[in-house]
Each structure stands twice: as C-alpha cells, then as structure tokens.
Image 1 (spheres, rainbow, N blue to C red):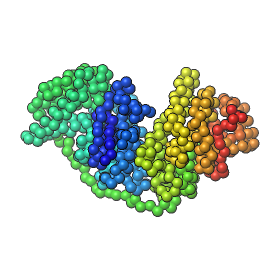
Image 2 (cartoon, helix red, strand yellow):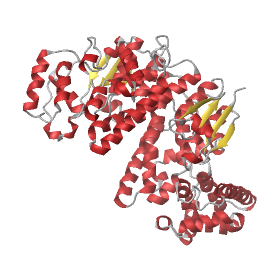
Image 3 (cartoon, rainbow, N blue to C red):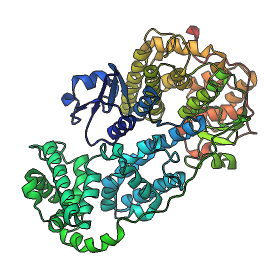
Image 4 (tube, one colour):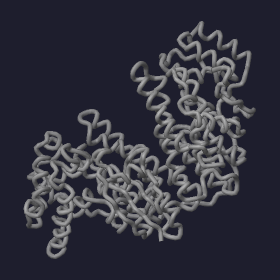
Amino acid sequence: MKSVVLLDFWVSPFGQRCRIALAEKGVEYEYREENISGDKNKSPLLLESNPVYKKIPVLILDGKPVCESLIIVQCIDEAWPDRAPLVPADPYARAQARFWADFVDKKVFDSAKNLLMLKGEAQEAAKEEFIEILRLLEGELGDKKYFGGDAFGFVDIALVPLTTWFYSFETYAGFSVEEAVPKLVAWSKRCLERASVANSVYDPVKFYEYGSRLWKLKGEAQAATKEEFIVILKLLEGELGAKKYFGGDAFGFVDIALAPFVSWFYSYETSAGFSIEEAAPKVAAWAKRSMERESVANAVSHPDKIYEMVGVLKKKFGVEYGERESGRDTKRAMKSVVLLDFWASPFGQRCRIALAEKGVEYEYREENIRGDKSPLLLESNPVHKKIPVLILDGKPVCESLIIVQYIDEAWPDRAPLLPADLYARAQARFWADFVDKKVCDSAKNLWIVKGEAQEAAKEEFIEILRLLEGELGDKKYFGGDAFGFVDIVLVPFTTWFYSCETYAGFSVEEAVPKLVAWSKRCLERPSVANSVYDPVEDNENCRLLQLWPQTRHANVKPQALEWLQPRLLVPQEAHELVNLVGVRKRRHGDALPLQAPLAPRHQPRSMHLRSEASK
C-alpha cells in the first residue's frame, strides 16, 4: 500500500488534474490544502517538497515528492499500471497526447487569462486568439468521444479543468464558446459526467451546472438541486471565512472566476424559492463588495436582464451533439525516419543527440527558419509551424522534449534515455521541463538587455545554473552514471556559455564549476560532439570573417569575432551564428544574404568550451 499525499489548493485547475487522475485510478490519498497567498504562508512541507517553484500541486508518493501537474499525471499512470490507463500504450499516440497536453499548458491558460485581464481592442485580439486555440483543439478532437478515442485519458485530464471557466470567459469577453466550438463543449459535458471529474473540479462548474438546473427543473428534482446548491454555497462560505475576498484583501483569481455568477443570484432565488443571503450571508456580502468594483460592474449584466434571459436560455441548454465512433490505426512498421531541423537550433540538437544515442539512421532536412518554410514543415507542424519535427513512418511528432521521449519509447531495446524507476523518471521530466521554462529565455536576456537590466539577468541566469548544479551534485550525469534525458535537454545550451560570458562579463566556470565539468564530459560523447554546432578550425572562414567587420558587421564585438573566426565551416553557418549570438540587436535589414542551402554535417565536433590557455 503506497503512501500518497497531495498538496493542493481547492480551485487550482492544475491540482484538479492530479485529483482526476487519482480518481480514475481509484487511488486513496491524503489531501492537504495549501495557502498560496504568499511564500511566508506556505507550509514547510510544500517549501521542502518543491524548493524550485514553491508551488502546488505536489504529489508525495512514499515520501518522494513529484512536482508539475503534467509530470504528476504521468507518474500516477506509471505508478498504477494495472488500473485504467491514462496515457496511450502506442508510442506515437503517446507522443501525440503529450504534444496536445503541452499545447494546453503553453497556449490555453495564458490566452484565457488575457480575456479576464484586458479590455477594448486588446481583449478583442485576445478573444480571437483564444477562439483559434479552441478550434485547433476541436480539430484534434474531431468526432471522437474523447481526445484519445473511446477512452478518457491524458489530454482530457489536462484540458477539462479549464472548461469549468468557460462561463467566466464568455461573460467577460462577450462571446459564446458553444457557438465557436460546439464539439468541444459537447466533449466537456461528457467529461463532467464522469465521477472523477465531477468530484474533482469545483465551484465555477458547479455554479454553472447546478445554477442552471435551479431554473430548468421543477418539483422534487429542483428541490434536490437546491439542497446541493446550498451545500456548494456553504463550502464557499467556509473557504471565504472572514476575508474580504477569497485571496485575502486583494480581489483575485477565485473572485474573478465566481463574480460573473453574482448577477444570476436573483434568478436562482426566484426560480427555486430560497434566499442566498440566509443560506450563506458571507458569500452574499462578498457578492455585494464584488459588484461595487468597476471591473465587475462593467463586465456583468444586470440581474433583471439575466432573469429575462432565462426563458430564452431554457431552449438553448441541453442540446446534445451526435457522436460518431472513430479510431486511429496505431500500427506502424518504423520504416523511415526524417528530422526537419535547423543546424544551430539547440532544440533540434536534442533530437539529433537522442537519435545518435539510440543508433538510429535518419534523413536530415535543413529548414529555412527565417524565410519560406517548407510545405512539409507547415503540414507536419500546423500548430506551431516550427522545428524540430521528427517524422516516423510518415507520422510527425513535434516539440523537442516530446520527441526525445518518443525516440526513447520507439526504440526501447537500445540505450535507455529515461530512467526505469518511476520516481527517477518523474524527476528527470521535472528538470527537463525546468530547463525549457527557465534556461533558454534567461540566457537570451544576457545579450538582449544592457546596464542594470543585464546585471539582473546575469544574477537570474547564475541562480538557475546553481539550481541545476545542485541537482547534478557529484554525479557523473544528471541521472547518475548513465547519460540520459536531462543531459540531452541541457547540453546544447552549454555551447552558448562563451557568448553568455562575453556579453555579460562573468565566468560560468567560476559560478558553477561542477556544471562546466559535466558539460565537458558530455561534449566528449560522440552523440553530442556530432550534433552540436562545430568549432572546427578553418583558415578560409578566418579570412571571410576578417572582412565582415569592414562591411555590414562592424558592430559585432571584436572578442566575439575573434572566438568565432576559427570555429565555423561555411559562410552561411558563420552568418547565422553571428546573428544568433548577439547581432540580433541590429536591424533585420542589415543581414547578409544567405549562401547555398547548408548540407547536413557528420564529421566529429571538438569541444566548444574554451581551453585554460584561451581564457
């Protein structure tokens, strides 16, 4: 019997994902409510269990903490493999599920938040963007019952908590989600009928569903709904307590989510014959305070208008959409492997390293990431339209972290990239995700900003590296003695350390000596040396680069040119690399014309870090 503890906050959609997953697996667990209003109010257990982000949710399994909701859901699926599977068994279907769950995390939440925060033309633009995102999701859903087919699974769990906020989005931004994406709304209703979802998501959806039933139903059915609705009000009353707003003195996320329902209170009371103020006086007082806020008063309708609409709404609610069973052919023969990439991309380099570690032969296709992208790229990644894309037997997989995991699962009999141990695998996913969220943007700031902003960026970057060094410790690689997932994800960025140092005036090796020693070990591996960009000596390139400062690139730092000159293969590579490591500050029109398309390279690479003599 495993010991399972969930650190969470009742209204968090990220925590709701974990609760749904645990419920689907039939796992009993201890729920611990966290105060998320500030670090000083968070429990010692939360701060100890998630020292990097200090956020919920955290799943503690037999004393071992797992953080980040999508990682937690995968951990739950792997910890109880004999119960209802959440992630598909087929490697390609699994990669696709990870892609769409990642899409929800990267696109849906921020876009939805903008609907609540912006006004005027900015809100209109946010609304169009949000609807387009929902339509992409609806296109992936198609006519299937759930995103994975007939079985409720990973993508459904990732997305469904957000659907409980649809009413708030509609109210604040003035549109109908159901009109925009009817199949997606029908899917959300099916999900909300599942006990795991209904018992895990909280009040926004319960207000929406139970509040609607108050004026839809009559007699005993309405009386039963009224009792359930009052229970919801009392739960909210307990959470609100003596606070001004749900988050304390500041009007916040929970208040924004529930405020649109305040204008419906009169319709609920009139239809079902009860008083909200008598049932939950603190909630009623909160509602009055909220309605006095200009942002709420200007966004919601008057209670009388809502009451007049009830008759019309009765005709609209309860519409069912036809369902057609659909399935996917999950059989594949693994005949061809194509990688769409750009030579200098650290994200593409991850895929090349993984393929090399597995000993997989593949066709490399160089993409033009600045100009016209190939029809194959646009067809293979219609959502983001970016490299890298791995095409295996004609089936595209996008996003580098997902691709690397897919490569590991597609060739399971070759050098494993992710740990076999459940907890170690969850930790590897956490740190790989950390690299994606923190390292790249932080490093980029070092050569984009100047002055005090650059100093702040440098401190942030060093702190991120120190966190990574702390996780590495005295191990040979992040996973121990074996080169693996986190190493593959991070090592391409180490080739940019010199650029970071040059632009920001510091020594990476002095700040994180163990991390630099690790990077040197990684760069000695053929899989890495043959995948990251090449610092090979070439006299012709020296002469070419010596001419550049006299022409268009006079503003390139001399020390950067001195380092770049012996390290490039062809003019196109030199041109692109100079652009990438810091000449982005100049106008785009100053760029030199590109030469002939770059051919893939296979000769060994030497290490990129400077020698002691060149420091």
